[in-house]
Length: 202
Image 1 (cartoon, rainbow, N blue to C red):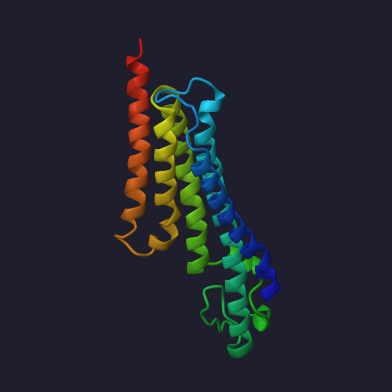
Image 2 (cartoon, rainbow, N blue to C red):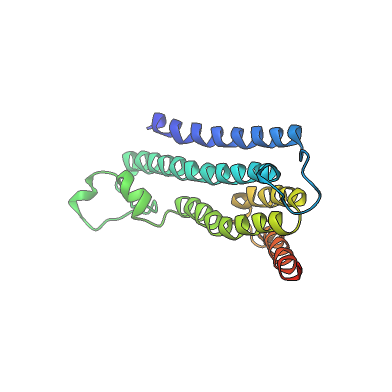
């Protein structure tokens, strides 16, 4: 089973490396010749595009982590089955006499059919980022268009940083707020400033 974990593990590492490379590229390229104000042409959106690409790679990092977590948990349950007999996807003994319980849980059962805490957390990491990316991207591009393309990228990188350690704070309430609240603040600031600028532009 170990070899099955290599693909999602390699995918996770590759996405993290991609984010790092994009960030270095953004630092080297800087903010270019964009004006300190609303984007005037497509070139002005390039720094924001770096943030967008990194956000997508962060999402795929969590996608790969889902697979890695599933393979890891399935392997652990199979090993426990070999030592202790049938256990359900939560790792608890099930002595109901079902003949199907003469074998360990399948990969499908582990991934889709149970309440395994680690898998549930990995799924939540993905779901939460998907939910947050929509308002974030809309707010960042609106801010670039109506307020300041230069600072939109800077705020975008800040948002990405706050979101990056969400999985490490998820089960450590109230430390979780150290990730979510600053990220919310980035979105709210960009959105409200963009709406204000759009409604006051003559």
